[in-house]
Length: 166
Image (cartoon, rainbow, N blue to C red; front, side, top):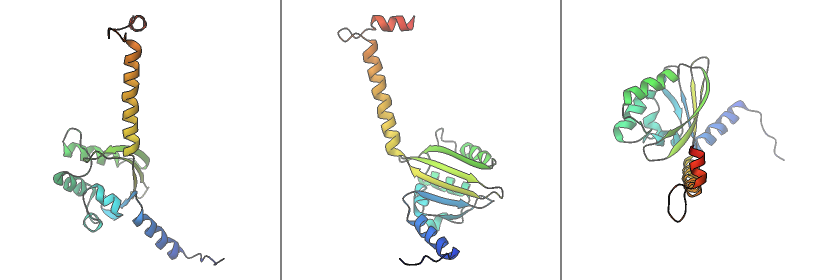
């Protein structure tokens, strides 16, 4: 069996290679919220290449992707409000996870860690299949509940449904 060298540089280089090749997104922002490292998956979420994304601030990435029709779905369309809310969330040191819908209907789960010295580590993974299955299950449940509450012949509420309502 070959001997494994305990070289910190070797492990660091291997880890960076794995992160760059990953199908999940990785990013590191400095204390000024400037992107100092990301892999292709993270950059692609915002319609950017790694070389275009690194060096941009979080707000520049959001504005650029919004202008090009890529990136995070901003529900009310108010990008400035979205940025304010996102930046206020960045004031809280620690670990947080959340889900975001993308403009192209993909869903991502984001894990974010803000360190004491204000570096922001971001990891995201695509959960689109999971969200689609969740939606299908919700629709199936609604259908079954409707079937259970109505008479199959007339389509009106059955006695049990009236009792539940009362």
